[in-house]
Amino acid sequence: MSKATEQNEKLKRAIIISVILHIVLIALLIWSSFNEHIESSGGGGGSDIDAVMVDPGAVVEQYNRQQNQQSDSQRAEQQRQKQAQQQAEELQQKQAAEQQRLKQLEKERLQAQQEAKEQAKQQAEQQKAAETAAKQAQEQQKAAEAAAAKAKADAKAQADAQAKAAADAKAKAEEQAKQAAADARKKAEEQAKAAAAEAAKEKAVEQAKAKAEAKAKADAEAKAQAAADAKAKAAQEAKEKAAEAAKAKAAAEAKAKADAAAKAKAAADAKKKAAAEASKNESDVDDLLGGLSSGKNAPKSGAASGGGAAAGQGNQKKAGASGAAIESYLGQVQAAIEQKFQDPDLYKGRKCEVKIRLAEDGFLKSATSAGGDPALCQAALNAANLARIPKPPSAAVWDAVKDATLEFKP
Image (tube, rainbow, N blue to C red):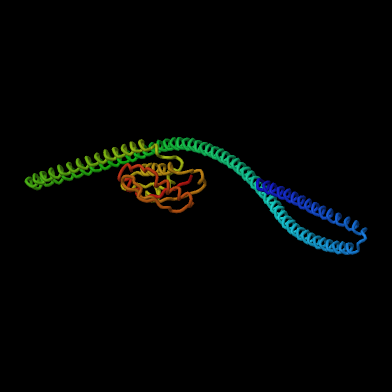
């Protein structure tokens, strides 16, 4: 804007100077023509006066002088006109140059004004664009702040929901664990009672068998003694010396048989005592580890797949281990694995069999799927690898269950 104002001031000064020069030039032209008119008017008067005189020579001379004056005047007029024409041409040239300069100045002024307008327009557009950009930036910042606040609120709501779900799941898991522990304890007590009854029954059978064997041995000894007495009596009748020898021999044999019977009885008593101690130890171990058993999938009497597979597909004795002891231990193993299940309710109505191999200290050597639902089998394998399996109560139980198959039916 300052450049346009400066150009406008220059143009105004140039126009004023041009007008002043034109006025001065016109005044000079008027003053010059006024002087020539006065001179030409004075010479004409003299000729009129001279024409009145009588002297013709004077008249001719006057005429010639007038002619000369007129010629001079014409020449002066021509010279003046020529000068005036030159001055006019110069003036026109100056005017043309001045007009050209004025046009150029006007053009520059218009161009400067146009440039100023365009610059102002550009500045206005730039300012408008800057304002628009600032407004957009503010809107974007507001949108970003709103989005951040919304994301924060959503994250907080999601975290609260997850915390609540975790708390509910924890409470549910604790309740399920309590229920499972109660069921396992109840099942263990029932199994312990059944094992004790089975052991008492077996002990009574063994005692009756031992009594029958002792009675049979006593009868055999009595018969042998009677035969020996008869033989000794016959030998004594036949030959007294031979009878005494036979009697001594019979006495020695009787003593040896009595010693053997005493040893057999001591062995039977020791066997019964060892069986009673083994039954008591099994009952104590079952009581200590009973809290780990679960009534949910613990092997049923005569139908437990784990106990049946480990004991030869049934509840028979193997290597001196009772079926109750085997089933009790397998129930503890299965309960320990089931405690490590994740969301067992997801697998309701499904079934899976898992083969396990155990070390003597209860360490899980391997666990493989033996058939069933793939998802449940994978969950059972993961739980088996995480479970803390109890140590078998005896070598006989371990020998019976070291290669066992467990069935899981949530």
